[in-house]
Length: 262
Image (cartoon, rainbow, N blue to C red; front, side, top):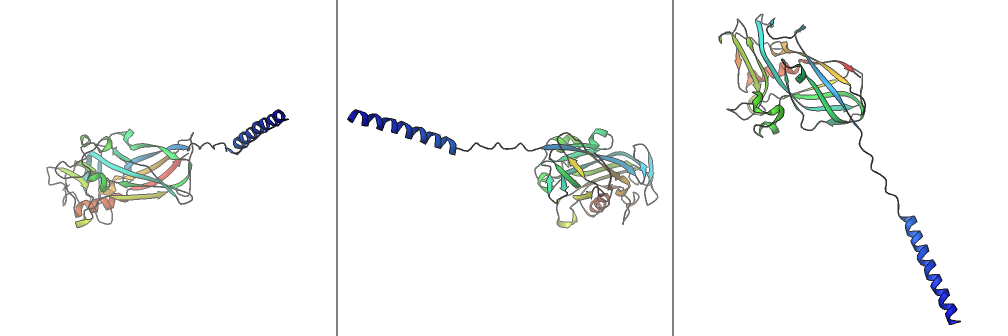
């Protein structure tokens, strides 16, 4: 009798362990895999012109003051690119600094990757280099001093460099405008922000698409605007100040959204 009772107790303990094990297995949830964020890319093309004419070096143009101009250099920085979604939220590209050169077509076609998928209605960017990177000294990539856009005699970057010749210049027939300055004191902040919608259109970012934004840039705005720049009166600007701020203000108006390629 005692042996039979022991057998019964043994089988009951085995059954209890089995049931407990089954219950534990059933209660352990299967982990849900974390979805991989979907991203895509887009391009921005900057097409240069001068008061409605195609821009090129060794070509003579006339500013609003009636002065003849011929460019030998025109470089500038685009930075801090940001997109606005149709729902009003924004995405900003980290560490976005681009040096655009008029003698380098590839530099004027920006390819921006790792953009979250979605539908976007506008773009924002800065002309110049923000204060954080201005006080960080000489850097690399587009911000490398080898690009000759860094003032070695003063901490900071040249945002816009326009050089050329004009018979109106009293400086040996040359003009040189090196525009920079990031401090707000003494009217020397030349960083400018440009924002444009896509004219009612939207840009879709998806893994297998490569939409392209086309921007027109009117270089005549360096000289022509609410106030005009005369080469005869001011053939050179090489430091932050009121003249540099006026040129930065006019150039801010140079950028217009043209169209969108999906």
